[in-house]
Image 1 (tube, one colour):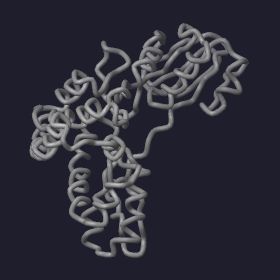
Image 2 (cartoon, helix red, strand yellow; image 1 turned 90 degrees about the vertical axis):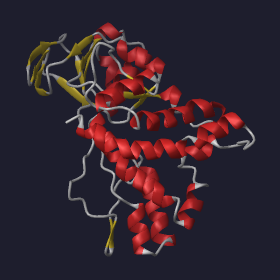
Image 3 (tube, one colour; image 1 turned 45 degrees about the vertical axis):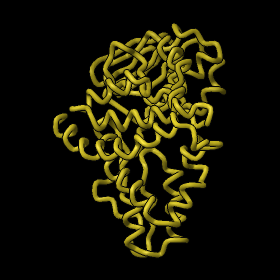
Image 4 (tube, one colour; image 1 turned 90 degrees about the horizontal axis):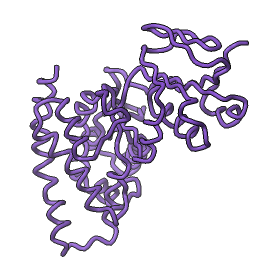
Amino acid sequence: AEATLVPINELPQRAAEHDHFTVIGAGKTGMDAVVWLVETGVDPDNISWVRPSDYWLFNRESILNHPALFETTIGSFLGELEILGSVSTVDEYCLQMEARGVWHRIDPTITPTKFHAAVCSKRELAMLSSVKDVIRLGHVTHIANGMLTLRDGTATVPKNSLYVDCSASAGIVMDEQPPVFDGDTINLNLIRPFQPLFGAALIAFLETKVPDAAARAACTHTVNFHDTPAQYVAEMLPAMMNQGAWSKVPPVKEWMERTRLQAMNHLMTGFDPTDSAKMELLMRFGPAAKAAVGNIPKLLANSQ
């Protein structure tokens, strides 16, 4: 029999035909496939998972945008800035993010090399960790019924395993990406890390409400997609430049304070300015951001 390979969208329709599953891809789509299989009752021992790389993951419980979790989520945002302002290398940054509970990883014995800003709850992490047949032989180059050929070797899986293709990669824009506002063309580049919907909405607002070309340019430095923690840290600099510019353009500042796409607005619902503990947290953001901007070039240089 030939091997059966399906995209993740076909998994619900095809799962009942198979007793074993081989998930190809270590990223968020692969994680979603594994979680779906485990949640629907598949024994983790009946799942093989091709993971050429491991990823750092946001801990969902640390970044929920609800006012009842103000201290936790604001503490996570602030903690990241304070870490960026104090560590010497990207490796230290990653471990500090894990120690603070902002990030976590599937396998504590493996140091992840990738970060795509995927979000994963502790419950989901436990399901992912329950899969023990992890194939770490690089990317798949060929599949057959019961056999995979990978860049660094071959691996066997049970006959008639359903291969689930989760191997597509996220886009990295070109180094010479044109600006957002480029003559009569608008390029929908990222202007905040991993938040394309927010960026598209703000670009549309700038188009309609802010005609000044210099203000538009200051608000829309391109923030690239990132594949590694070091790339993510590097993209923090144009992101912080944008954030600073948004607060200096009155129409943009007003829009930022009311858009539902801004996480802070949800956290600030019902905020009491006489709450000294919460105010103390917020007052630490300015100095922490300044320290982070000053330290990021140094920690990147030390991580080469």
